[in-house]
Length: 303
Image (tube, rainbow, N blue to C red; front, side, top):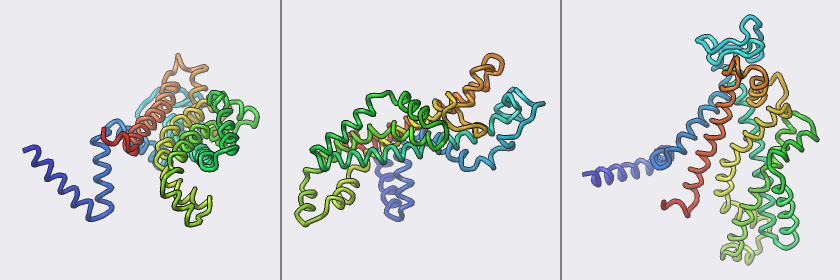
């Protein structure tokens, strides 16, 4: 009976997928939830954070910059869900607007870092020789420093701010994509269809961008989803040390620093709430990245 039901459901799913692209997306989403429940939980948390960041003005009742000395250091209540800070600002509003900063810096830093690193790996793997040696030694030099230490050194030299945080995160993250893409390019470069492209006179740029890059795009996407959590953690660390986003813009790291220094023992919600926000964000991207790797990696699909 169970086998018959499964066959019927599979047949219905195939028919639904054949009707429209929307049906195929719904089926793929359901299969992802059923086979990778932890990855689905991570994706759900990410969607909630994106929703909060995009619709922050409509979600929050208070302005994150509004100061009310008479309401300072209030505990969580029905009026202020996460309480208030030392200046009487609504903590829920600052957490929601802080999601904008963390996700924006994380996404931009990851796109720049993974994008530049992928181009470095693509060039190194395709041209080889001295180009490969020079580019890979550059990647080795970046990897020789711990990521957070390198980001701190870059921001300390260039000064705090949003733009410098982008630069520091992107430089910190570019070495690993360069190595991963280089390995994929070396495996794809010797295939018959690349030799055929050379035979018909295709240029190096066309072969790299039209033939090799699309075939190594899956590991790039997986790697980007995995390092997004690292980018958010680096941004929070920079903000915690006062080298990230400058006040009065709310950032989870700076909120944690302000609470941990003075108010942790008397008003623990000021440290617990931003700490949980950072942990959930990193945890969600790690879960989703691991599940996406299992789905897109052909060697892991069977399992």
